[in-house]
Structure formats: C-alpha cells, structure tokens
Length: 406
Image (cartoon, rainbow, N blue to C red; front, side, top):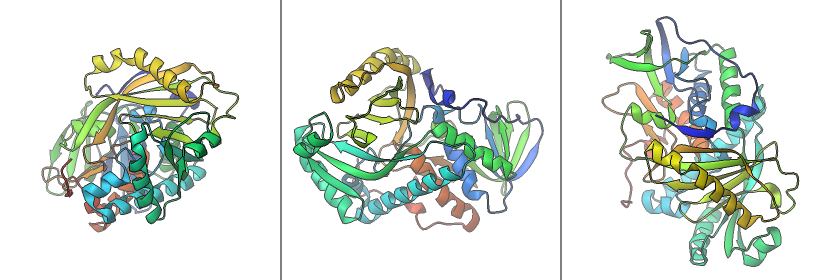
C-alpha cells in the first residue's frame, strides 16, 4: 500500500535513529508482531513483562509507515461524538470507551517520560468549535453527556470564545488535559527500550505467505526465511487490510501541512488543539519546535494518483483555513503530505479475531485518535493472549453489535 506522498516532517526531528538487522535465518517465538509502528510498539510494551518470547518485524525501517504521517493529537473524543456513540452502542459502552481512551492517554504520558528518546509529550487543552450556527444544540447535548460522566470540559459561547481567541464562533467545548507528541520519536524510542529488554527486532523484513497449523502459525519472508509463532499480532496499521478485508473499515485520503517555526503564539490561547464540528473537518496543533500542523480536508478516494494530484491545492487551502482563524500568525508550508487515513463506519477501533486465522489478532486502531486507540487495544490484547479474555474485548471485536445501523 502506497501510504503517503510528500515532504515528511517527523523523520527530520530525530537524527541517526537506532537501526536493526533484517531477518537472515529461520526463527521461532511465542508472539510475532508484524508492524514496527506505534501499534506494534505498544503491543510489545504490554507483553514485555509476561515472560513471552516476542519478535517485532517491519517491511520498512522502524516507524516509517503511517507513524511518519500521524499528526498525533492525543485526545479521547473522536470523529464520532459521544452522542453518536451512545446512539450506536448505548450510553454504558460509549462511556466505557471514552474512559478507556482517557486512561490510555495518561499511560502514553507516563510512558513518554520514561523513554531514552524524548517524544516531546505535552499536555494541551482542546477547543472543539461549532462550524455552523445550527451546531450549537449538538454541542450542548454533547457537553451534557461529557459532564455527566465526569470528563473535564467547559461549554463556551460566543463572547467567551472571543475573549480567548481572535476568531468568532457561536459555541465550543473546551477539553482539559488532552495532549500532543512526536509519534515517530515515541515509536522509535519505545522499540529501542524494548529491544534493550531482549525483544528481537527486525526491519526491512517483509512477509509474503503463511502456513497455519493447529497450535502455531508460520510466516515466510520474501527472502525465504520462516518465523514460527504461537500467537501473531498483525499491527500493520492500514496495511492490516492486506492481511484480512474488514467490512467495517474505511480508507480515505487526508492531507496535512507543517509550517515554518513561529515566534509569537500570543493570540493562540494556551496553544490548544483545535478542531471543529464540520465533517470532514480541519484541525491544528503546535509542535515542540514551534511549528504548526494543519490537517484534514479528507477526500473519499482510494486511488493514489487522485489523492496525490490534490496535494498542492489542499496544501494551499489548509493554510487558508488556518489564516481565517489566526490572520496575525504568518506561516507557509515547509512540509506537506497526502496520506491514506483509516476509520470505521461505526466510530470504534477494531480488534479483529477471525475464525480463519486462529491465534492471530488484527489490531486496527483506526480513527483520528489512532495512538490512543492502539494503546487501548494493546492493553486488552495482552489479557486475551495471556488469560484468554478481557472484560472490554466485546466493545472492540469486529462482531460487536450496534443499536442502530449507521
């Protein structure tokens, strides 16, 4: 899968990252993790203290898949609102999902502090504003559910927003203690720590086939070597769909620019994460070196040529959308990209366990909070592998029921 095109920013933030050999022999292990991005790293992190023999492989260099284009807004609320999730899954399941995401955010923050490579995790509040006047009733309802379940939120109206920001909006929900980080440095740093603990890591090692037995699965590499494992986690991001088609998964094209460094953020209250009620939406955040990431303007195209042909126009439009909010901050796109973006029809990430793939688990943290979802699913998967079950598994299985068809 041709995941992305453009001038990428995250790899420029870490000079001389650790490197790993490619696989040159047949091996066996307890758990094979296919994918050396953030999801594979998180799975290995949770399994590292179980005594299981774990191997991570990636067909690229570590962190060079979709992790390189992840804009890494660390939030618990996603593209599907709390209200929409309640309509689909019921209030109890929807609230449990958001609370698991909030717990995962705290774990990402704590883990970031322990890594030898600093991933620049920073707590940031979020502003979720109304794109249209008629959205006010929707965010009032959304706020009431969030407040009822104990989330740290405030409901702002036009005058309150105007006192904080240089733009005018009818209303917004203000979220406390979301966050931002560098996903590439986080992933590279975490896998380095895991490798130091004895987890074997192989990069530029691509899978081409498999042999399924009753108690083991053997995957073969393009160089003809075999990896035999009791359990296999496919943590290949959007390329999980190359291993197993999933009807609930969606793939669209998305765009982002990363600007020049900015000297003065005076008009940007608390350097909040910012996004909106419109769908598709535009979002923005800042970086550790004072750049601005502006993303969104998704397109329902799966074809690389169509996706990439729109990049220049999207790049300019994203800057235009930013300038509508912050006309006093002068920016230009120093980095820009087009990339595939995966989501789900029902708004929840997927932990796929399929009859035709025994002892094999597909981790699909699809959605705009991919890193948070990956942490939630990885923690659940640890229990599934070591204990046989987790009480939250049914929320994320591909077989989950919904109350209303979407």
